[in-house]
Image (cartoon, rainbow, N blue to C red; front, side, top):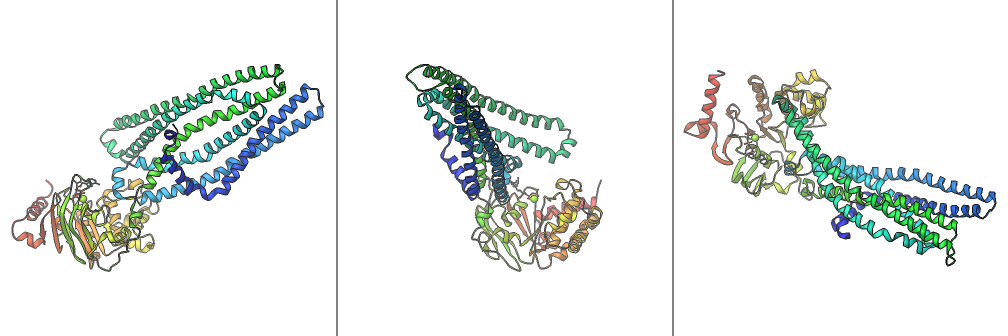
Amino acid sequence: MASKMFNTRDKANVKWFWREYLKGKTPWIALILALIVVQGFVYQQFLVFTESGLRVIFEAGQVADLLLICGFVVLAFGMRAIVSFVVPVVSARITGAAILELRRDLIRKVVYLNQSYFDKTSSGDVILRLVSQVDGVGQFVGQTTVNALRDALTIIIVAAYLIYKSAILFFAAVVVLPIIFLVLKWVSERVRQFQTQTEDVIGNYITGIDEMTGGIRTIKMSNQEQTEIDRLSASSGAIKSLYVHLQRSQAMILPAIDMSSAFVFVLVIGGGGYMVLSDLYTLDGAAIIAFILGMVIIFDPARSLSQFFTRLQASLVLLDSLKTLNDTVGEGELDAGKEEFSADTVEIALENVSFGYHEDTLIFSDLSLLFEAGKKTAIVGSTGSGKTTILSLMSRLYEVNEGQVSFNGHDGRRFTKSSLRSQFSVVAQDVVIFNSSVADNIRYANPSASDAQVLEAAKLARIDALLIERGDSPVGPKGSQLSGGQKQRIAIARAFLNPSPVLILDEATSALDALTEKHVNEAFAELQKGKTTIVVTHKFSSVLDADKIYVLEAGRLVEEGTHDDFMQGSSLYKTMFEAQMKDEKKGPE
Ligand SMILES: Nc1ncnc2c1ncn2[C@@H]1O[C@H](COP(=O)(O)OP(=O)(O)OP(=O)(O)O)[C@@H](O)[C@H]1O
Ligand SMILES: [Mg+2]
């Protein structure tokens, strides 16, 4: 039975959380525990005073005694009040710190995860973990657990006192416990199941919102508002129905406890009354009233403690999800112990490479390409033929299945990814712009660059006018306030700002008008001198001067040579080239 409510995985997860985020705070945790014990004893003392007070009343004692007892009661509860303030304050500090550390660790983890992780994982899943699941675990540790400990200790201390007063009466009263346990077990299993599903649907919902805000332009242009409303409403509906199920299961607990408590009180009043009336027992009326009061004191914490178990199940689900993320092996771990790559000139070669994004479908098999140091190599080929994938393999966003990508003759896997990537300046096909100023976006490539350097790079990329005009104002989420060509020119400026031995241009000028393109290409020609340049393009005008051109077709290398070589005889290249020239001469119809 216990195995299902708290399995070995849960045990390992809790150990991990304790070791990483709580153990260092042991003194503070000890303080909390000590205060909680004080709190428990206050209740027990209250019972002692009450019983004495009742006896004073029943047995016509001194009013002064009564006042003294009242004074003690006030004192006892005053203590409890102070503790009630200090405990949450201290526990908030502990959990606040633990959660901050956990968030930092997970953020670091996520950022260093492999590209392939993000191909499969939706933004909602990541957001869910970093935002609400971390919070959920924190609240559970800082509030739920602390309260549960307080409740448990109060129950134990008061129960021990009641057993001391009358063991028979106490054990007669708690015969209902097994029933409560069965209900708890049943509810716990259901809560766990619903919580797992709830996390999934909330993840979907967040992803949906993210896609909606990111794609709002397309949604509006294609009149798909209603589709989005339906889609997000369906997600919300799923959350609602799970929520109702979850609450309904949890709601089973309190009635079970309340019914049991009725049973208990009947036993205590009936049995206790009988004990007072009977000559066989030494209990008096004051003792029974104090006993009943003790049971009342126990029941309240017992009610909340019972809910602790369902909260525990829900939190174990969250903890497991976070631990799974924490255990995912990322680039940082894979890089441990690797060499740093450094060189003035870089020659890159794909040697007999096989690769597929999925194991069952290979994009390349036995592909070999050489990118000579200091030369300009171009890759042309139809859309989807694998050009961008080649660049991804070079920067080791993905690892090859077979063969190797070598750098100056050494297998790239010998080196840390960061040292390899620092060799590249890349203008990628999909430009990523952040919601900050144009200057900051350019500076992203080289955070230590001066304003003058940023402006110089902007000039070369022909984006200086925009940089000056927009000043410090941010360019909107994902650069939504910029035109496609402006975004692309920012990406180009980044390459100028941080020139590295290898320059990679993936459709770098596809969004520019012919004149701007001409200027940018001239600047590139200057930048390329002495660098290993790799150009991927559909525009043949950019490859005329390449030292070598590879023609790719569906992942296969079909031709290699220079523009002049290809134009000699008949080639796929020549056919494509001539088709493009004809179109350009014809111009717009
Ligand atoms: N992350 C990915 N996961 C799975 N498949 C992918 C992924 N990225 C690309 N592909 C697939 O790999 C193939 C090659 O894609 P790639 O982006 O390399 O083409 P490309 O030659 O750059 O095309 P284009 O000229 O349109 O940019 C395509 O069939 C594409 O669908
Ligand atoms: Mg591409």
